[in-house]
Length: 150
Image 1 (spheres, rainbow, N blue to C red):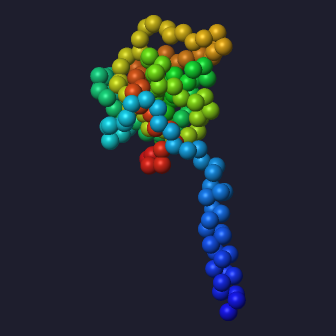
Image 2 (image 1 turned 180 degrees about the vertical axis):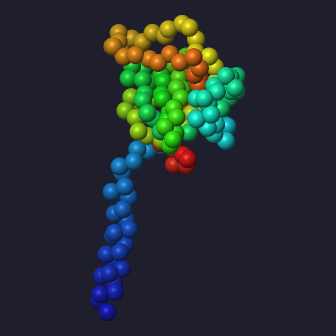
């Protein structure tokens, strides 16, 4: 009879200990404006025909392939098939952590042509390069490592 309470206690300890070991995944974080677009746009379709989406507020979902190591102002989002697209905070109001490479990400923004004007980073950020694609997703809001990313 004593084995049953002991086994029940052992099972309870095991269940309670799981969250302590599940801390490997970073906590979800939100940056910028709230995400209001519910349906994601295919990164593959976006990368193939960006002009088709120009002027539209869209949502893309994927994994952070690269992130700006200067200010965190741009992120390259890649889908499961390897297609990628650059999302960039043109006014640098939505900045990501520089160590978010590999995390799941959801980005909402306005698809626009890349401005011709270069942006400046501080002296401490010198030495990094920012991509200059013809089209860019002008970042409005980002969920980093979202639980429900597809």
